[in-house]
Length: 163
Image 1 (cartoon, rainbow, N blue to C red):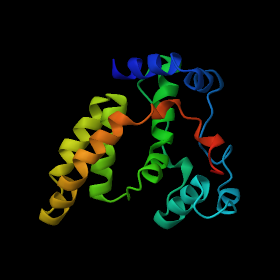
Image 2 (cartoon, one colour):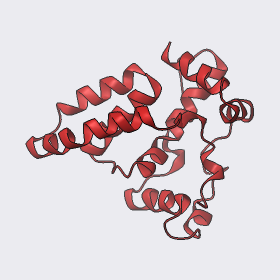
Image 3 (tube, helix red, strand yellow):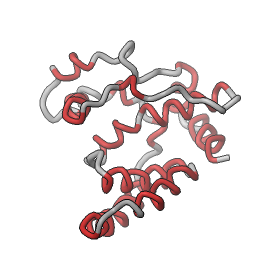
């Protein structure tokens, strides 16, 4: 149901409808990381390329969506998964245990996907005392940010890399 609600929100938004129609992918065949590194320092694209480099990530690392029979819903899930690292950059959250759990809170507020809420709750079990303190400080902000910002599924990130 949450995935269907995500799709409905995208259908209700002009940019979201375009994304659903064109189905852009954030993979190496459509995304030139080397070109992103040439963008001005502080730009979204430069920050994304630096995030990938710093953490040894690659946009093609996400496995294909399985077990979603509806083709459009499968794309919505694909888009959500492919934008995950972009959300790390947008919210300046590292891919650490604390950063991932905080981002899961934002994702839960944004998407309503049960796996995001479960990831946030279950992730807490892996944190030590210092990490729990860090997360306690981040959690209220993460939930507010997730609820207050625009629908992140309705952003054409590819058009904002130079900003």
